Length: 291
DNA sequence: ATCCAGGTGATCA
DNA sequence: TGATCACATGGA
Image (tube, rainbow, N blue to C red; front, side, top):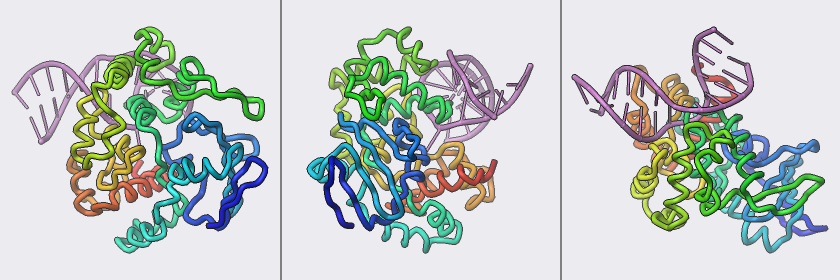
């Protein structure tokens, strides 16, 4: 990987195991907006950043080398050795070999804990498309205005304090649906520091998950997604409708309950579980497996 | 018109 | 534990 700064832009050459379209189409990065030139723009950590990729060259615009080192390097998980992970997963069986090959450029990004908490509460019994719309509305109405980029206004994700200050009606007007009360409740708990969301990553996966599950609107699947996308937990395996389908198709000969599929997978894949999950999720959804 | 969407919480056996 | 239901909303 060769990195240099030029004209308010950071260029990363010879990047491996990285494909932005796959990454942003894999059920994470709900706020990244695709531009007409096929680049993506988002507010991350209070900064507007634009990303594009041509072959094995990554372009990060509206930023500099210091922010790359301090923020983007870890955010894009460039410190994680995906070649080794993919190699290990591919050797498990042919299904996984195919899934890894298909999603060769996938990466689990290092998202913000609070944002993942709200995002995945919204995802319950909801479509990714709808979740994206609700988050857009919340950010536009209640997120801090960050600035303009290429003629478009950008807002931060609303803070816990801000969301806690809203009435259920105001939340409902953003199309949160029946999840309004969950958003309200977790916002109050996090904003008053009854739960220190940002210290959970220090705990082991089970403690981490149990703390998250103490919040209303957060069950096993949502907790797993938060831990996977913002706390770098690897020995977890979010099982949703897609994962149940693909796991049943590939590994199970009987109808197994979701908790059992989860334990089965974690026992089978160990510390590769979350990565396996991501490759299988993308594979299943793109190829409509089991539906 | 009916079903479904990256599920969760409540209730009942 | 396991099964069943309601839950807001909008797209297919």
